[in-house]
Image (cartoon, rainbow, N blue to C red; front, side):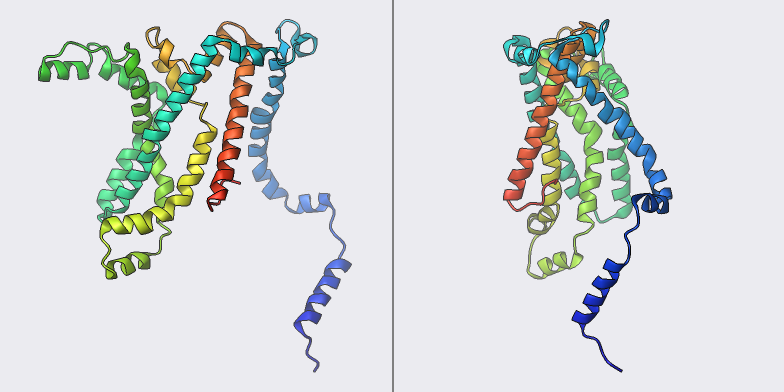
Length: 322
């Protein structure tokens, strides 16, 4: 019986694939119809609520009036984008947004990493699960509830001021009205609410670390700190880079709901960010075109930052996001 070589077998397979007629797109769609049906709701959601609304960005280049519509509004080109850099209020709002994002990256971003490293060192699984549940729980509270809790605790006659008065005899501190307390409170709220949830990603990365690496490190006499530095942290370095890139992409997105709920006339100067500014300017003052221009500007800057950070990450040998 004649034996065929691997090269001949590969040629025969290639000839067979060439001879087999390709199925039409309709045939392939019909064959995978149930899979596409499962995909359909998500696809419709993203098309209808993410892509179709993007058509409304055209009003950023018009003096839009809702009474005459998109088609008949006067085209003004980059007029509203020039206003962004000429308006002193917009410059102040951009600075507030950048400063708040910087504080969140410096103080809030590392907390989930630290929590994950600490939880990874807990050997008692019951204790570990209890701690995880406790730190995850705030994530499931809405910002309305969080803002309500903060207000109850920090108002002039709140629990914190009463404890400070009983313990130190201090007068009531208006935490919610003092501009200097606004940014720290926002960052602390983000840490309390989201840090526990962020640990899930890092703990998932740590679960893939080969235990033999730790065993070999112990044999070599490495301390726990050395094991964390040379084994644990390198294992989650790629995850840290990816999340940091995504965070840089939303550097001008400070979160509308949280900021809006915490704002008041006393903190408006330091707390008004791009998200709330677009609401006040575009909705409350009916300056739709300028509000849309500011929102579009924010999106473009975020896109540039995420692409740039991704390229930098790849130059340093990381995988990046795309």
